[in-house]
Image (cartoon, rainbow, N blue to C red):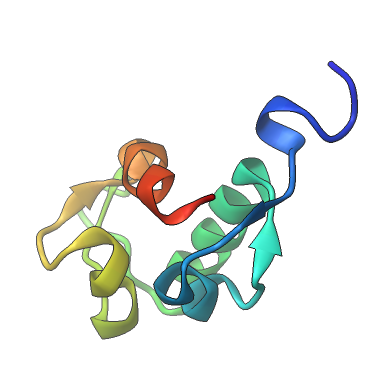
Length: 82
């Protein structure tokens, strides 16, 4: 895959996602990586099942309030990339 296409293509982030990720422009894969780092840094993973996390107030703007499966993050961030 050519650099700058598909998952590595830099995209503009919505203000809500940019607040969590810390950048205004990033690739989809970079967003996922930064979201995982944020989840682990703020201890948001479910201690009983690490596949799930509970969004904090900052992440709730992107993911909503409900506990979600971390591997489905990509479908939530699609609307926040342009």
